[in-house]
Each structure stands twice: as structure tokens, then as C-alpha cells.
Length: 150
Image (tube, rainbow, N blue to C red; front, side, top):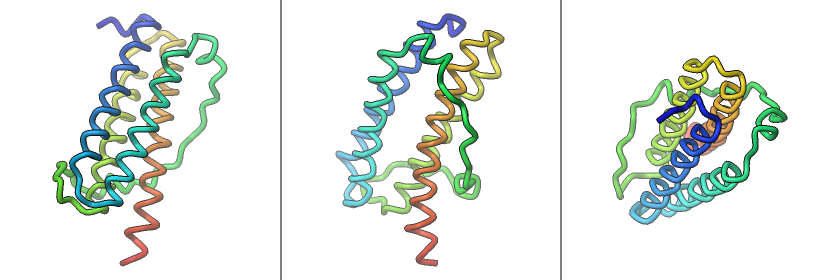
């Protein structure tokens, strides 16, 4: 795969979003905890929206995209990688999703560092930013739902 080409990079990102949709849909269909089921369904919907946006994105859209610094609560740094289990509780499901979003964020950051093409650099930065937003949303929910019980 040649990620030095804008269209190929978009196709790669679309495939990654579809993989995430499939993964979160699978988790939603198998998990027993109602809160975890709802969260996985919502994540699948968000990934579907991203996929749809990517299917329509142009080089001009990427040029106009505003990059911002997304806060990182670093919850994932202090947790182990969770494996999916149908009987997992909401906390475990949140940690699993946080790690999945962190991995996607890291993938796009690595692609930023792997290209000298300014347009592709911006595209990968935008994709990393979107994954960071997902991670922040999940970490915020973790902070509000789990830490409040401690």
C-alpha cells in the first residue's frame, strides 16, 4: 500500500474506520452489560460517520481543517490492555475502548512521522486528532463514571 498518495491514504483511513465499525458492532452484539452495549453501539455509529465523511473528503477539506490540541487525561497509560469478553463490566468495556482509540491515534501519529508530504502530514494529523477526541470522550466518561465511585 502506497500511503504517499492522497487517495490511497484516504482509502486506507476508510478501511480503518470500517474495521472499527465492524469491531464495535461485534462487541455490541456480544457484550452482556447494557451500558457497555450502548457505548459500543454509539462508538460504531461515530465510526460510521467518520467513514462517510472520509468518503466525501477532498484535498481542500484537509487544507481547511483546523488542528487543535486535544487534552489527554492519560487514563490509558495507567491501565492494562483489556481483552473483549462478553461478560465484561462497563469499566472494563470503557478501558477496552480507550485503548482501541489510543491505538488508532498512535497509528495516525506514526503515519504523520512517516511522510514528508505536507498534505498527507495534515491529513494524518487530522485523523489522529479525531481519534484523540474519541479517546478524550471515553476518558472523560471513565473519569465521571468510575472515579466518582472511588
